[in-house]
Length: 309
Image 1: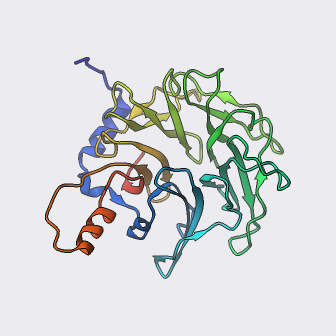
Image 2 (image 1 turned 180 degrees about the vertical axis):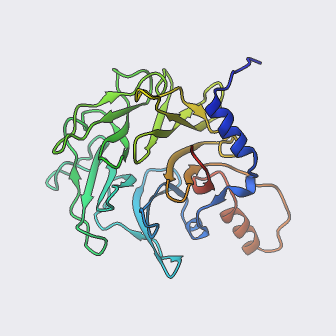
């Protein structure tokens, strides 16, 4: 087996995670087990509002959902009002909580009935009590004839996203657009410490842009499928070589769609982990409870305490 020399950051992360057991990584909320596939979790700064994507078994239907915390309990999930027959996924709430970015293949205007390629869109509101606006396409230079996915925005509104482009390093790559006060600059491909000839996608950018967490697919130092990685900037503002978050966060199954709550130091992510074991069931209800509530190979939202220094 090829010996891999681990940089200090990965050693630190491995030491941190070695203190955790599988049981320390838990499903976000059992109420979400009513859905087949749940992904793309995003929570407001005050922790009282959360957004995520629900999908059909084969992901041909995709809608955005909101829950709110009331009396320290999460409310019943509700579809966002602008969702229709097109695909909606990957919500990300701005730092001030009043702009919600997402991805959709909806047409540019209501007079067109043909779905578009996947673009980044957003809706706005004045405050949490207000209704969301109609969807707004973020436009040039971010959106193109290609597919754009997974928007993530720093405190100063700089935007990071995934794009499949012939000008990239590989299959899926992560790009950055600087906010210039009234518009975004042209997309910039992140360096080879982030991107590679393989797949890099679903990047979460920190508030200060000092670290980025994202997925890579079937890397040599991975667990066998999609794994979460982290990169930090050096003193010159250049991204360092990304390192694998290791087990027990990463498994042989797919881990993707990270979101990090910096205030409470909680990592939320989507996983298709599966630990179902054959057993005897006394009733159909017992069977359904076990299958639906377990880590069953369908995409679910998980959370884990995770300190980044």
